[in-house]
Image (cartoon, rainbow, N blue to C red; front, side, top):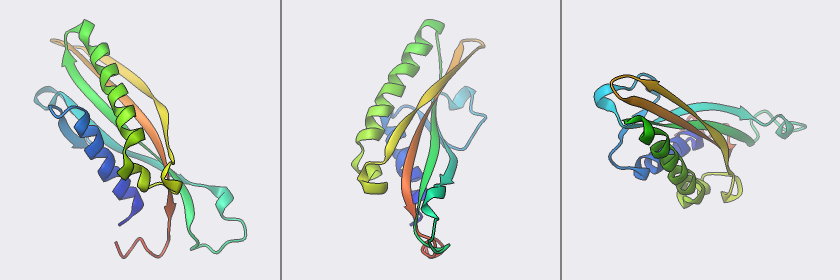
Length: 149
């Protein structure tokens, strides 16, 4: 299996387990109303490390840094939104950084880094808020083995 897809699939399972009452989505930007509360995985970007290419064949294995984002979106009373989002963030960080299946998909079984988070809130009938939490996963890309997955 493509390591990128394997990491993303596992990350969505881990994120959904943080709070099983959340609606689970992937790459859906417009989630609101009856779909809240929700956890949404955005595949994010990946960058191959340039330092890995010197003097090596084009199809040689290469380290890749992938940075997906997990977003939690809630609707609640204003004083509760931030606290609830921060709790979900904290649970997610602990879950991702200690998940043995995720770690096993990375270089040396330890290449997951928390990158940070960003919040957004909006008023409607109640307060709607979200927090995006980003991680970087470093995995080995093996050209020639991707198409057979």
